[in-house]
Length: 517
Image (cartoon, rainbow, N blue to C red; front, side, top):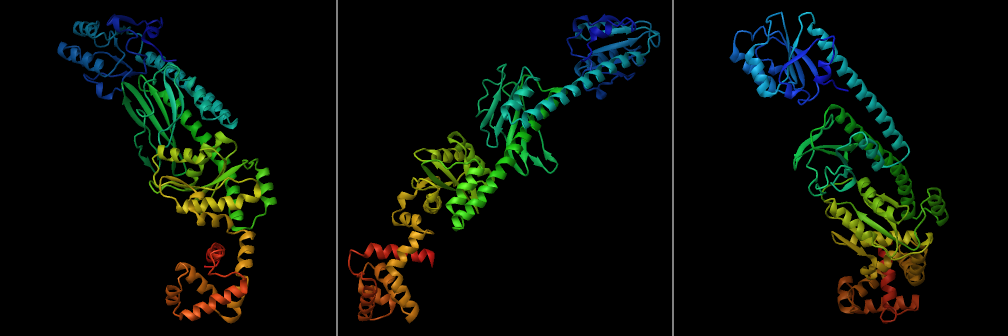
């Protein structure tokens, strides 16, 4: 504990006697250090909280110098003046006594036989004891914070552990956009400081690490520390107090910052490992290399059941500002946590997720990105699906809807018409069977005879079944076009000039074009 002037005056072996400024005893704070000086103005070497010891060698002959001496010490935050008698003066100069009473700066005398080093040693003993106690408390708190992190107690418990050692203030955690994650304010210090008021100012980052940002807000001291994971800003830890934090409180605050950093890093490492496995699975699914059985086994091992029923989401990272894909995945996971175990991963620059059907998860994700100031986000959403067998189709549909969607929008695959229908057919055995059944003989004929039947059919449908424009594009006579259409009819038993078969031919050509451009 720090030493107070009243305690020092109560030490009988020091023989100190208060002779002026009694009203200021213990009102100017604890003694932080003892400083000995015979200068007429020692204030440039003071930081505040010192006990100034002097023999009045440079003060004894000039009352004006004595008054300025007292004034400067008062203004620089000195706690008291100690004057040794019998060395330069036998009594404290009257001008000093009067001025100390006026400024309420305590002044005491020290007997000749008591050296200043005895007083300095007494002060140092208390100062070092206080620092040792603070260090012990900090180490003990560090152990408790680590225990909270290891136990997976979460950011709230980490900050609560620190807050118990910092009564009278508030501790907050914000994400990188300023959205409040945790607020611990038992004394109501920051009750009127809303999220908008506490929105973080940009904190400069430097190669040696982040700096601490100090400010005053509505008469309170605010200390903000950014939390970095790698090169990415993840969160802020904020302390709000009626007065600036003192040394040992800043040590406690640093424990809060370290604890939040460790907790976020722990969660990210677990998330990254889980997401890495999902990323691998996504690549296998979308490329068609994974079977339903394998998908089920992987998800069961990860304790990540597929929601039933479900919809797949595909999300493009924001265009403004540039945000790491991992941060986008983390945001989607946070939203999905309220709906069960999140199933989120990414392939290339697209984030994929599976969400329970008939929920507004996509809209919630979009709103969360907007709250963080992300712009240009687009989300594609598949049809409602059931079971593992439909997962590939669902992901394909979500991706197709994403490509067709506008910025700042959730786009459903059902709004894409024929393109949406085809998205569910691509990369499936059903699509291959459909193309083979309808166009197989035509494709075989083109392969054997190097013909132009498929090309002719595509041009004919593209021009709305009008022979003239189609023949012109192909560079053939209309009779040649008619011959080719007849040949297609004979090979497939379906006349491309009949309205009954136009949709089937159109779908087959669309699938063929996307699979074999």
